[in-house]
Length: 183
Image (cartoon, rainbow, N blue to C red):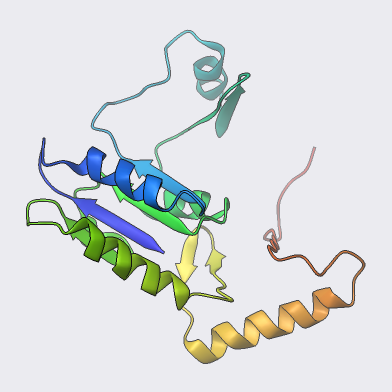
């Protein structure tokens, strides 16, 4: 489920998102914050130097955090990256062209927001998302109707059930395109 938060400066977006994350603490939530800054990676640091040398991305891992730095991406590729974490909820804040987001729910902070009603609406929408499946090609979501979604889900699950260890709840399948060069 994608929730897009819109609203001007000082309209309570951050406080609203914090409260939603707290209320859905038993679920996996990813928040995407789009910033107006040019970069948060620091020039001269290893992560920056690797990318300047041509790396598609650099990842720094500390005792408490993991941070991914990559070249500027469009909203579809950022959502695709977030989906790889298989969250129950993805919250997007700060994206001005909100209509480009394949959202499930838009929350307009400049209108009166009823936290209880919004959270109830989100919970109901998530209850209807069991056995969800998403298909992406080159980072773009491919829309699936109910029949196709169910067909993919049941077919893949049936094939995996024949494999040792294939009974898991979360499944990822990656198929790389042909023509990749390997060194």
